[in-house]
Image: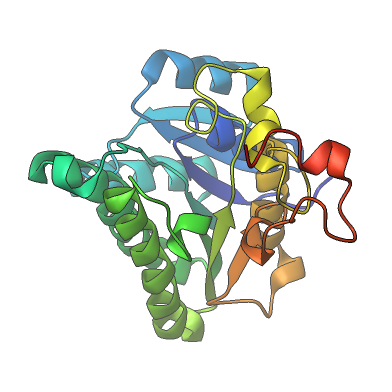
Length: 266
């Protein structure tokens, strides 16, 4: 409690899922939070449920003019801006040959351009406040990839690189910039039909054999945003249950065959 007392935070994509969990966690720890999204009814409902510490604003992250409005709204909450979480993202899976330029650019404009515009818009307010923290949500698909994710992977790799550039340029202003790389998360994106099997079956061969949950990602974001991470910038925090570490091989030592191998390789 009190970890973010008197701090002003913007979270994009905050109307549901991971962004909602992040907004709620910041507010619970003392922050004044501006929830930004294009899902107005849901976003307003979350802000109302959080209470006086929260406000909702409509924000298309790919629109530079709307970013200026959002930054102004955030500074009205407390006279400055301390934290920005670039969380908003979309996913349009398709094989490369089936991906239209329009669909590709739609994902790039929201995920990659939106992150760029957010950092650019937030920087002057953070500099004027004496510093701050930007946390960009990338993905394990910004480190590796999967088939069918050409536009999503391109955008998440870009976020990883942009984070490092911003960290180098803005460290002298006391602005730290880091990226978080979630694995599968139990949200509308990660489990669109809220299917119980999706929480476990695809993850049987990773170290922690289940999907991640929004609060677990929010905790990582809060750490990077907090003063506890005062010497951390330009880095990548992977929160993936061990997905990128490797795969458990059914039948080999150290694997519970009954749990890790059932039907997976059939």
